Length: 139
Picture 1: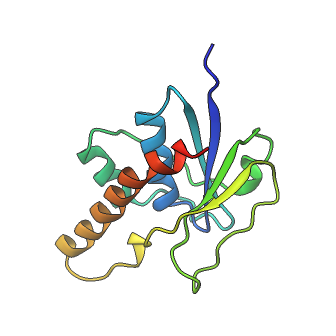
Picture 2: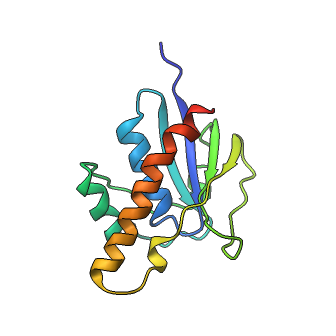
Picture 3: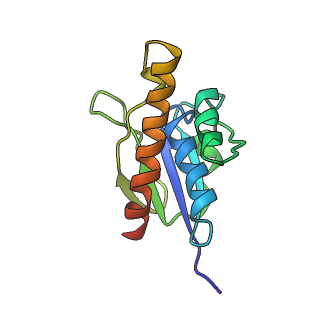
């Protein structure tokens, strides 16, 4: 029997970064991890561009923007906060699980043409996809 661990990706709005991280882990590392995501002030939707860029790499995600209260009873091994800068309010997790911070830029903040916005979403997706294996390997 494998020892599958639970990881929570925590942010404020739970609409982009934490959703992409949840989807990538559940698609690529499901033999070792089950991922969840939540926010302290959920946006109430998953950003359509986050879903689009996940589809581009073959990951279909039907995420739901959730409040931290909705995941507080899940036994967690690891909680990863994904806010990017000190200017952003990084949520505090008072539940169980080892806490780790790894900031990713917020693609919802990107302005410009549709092409520039989508390039920003792809960059954040690729940063998450590239860095998650190392982060998870350490736990």
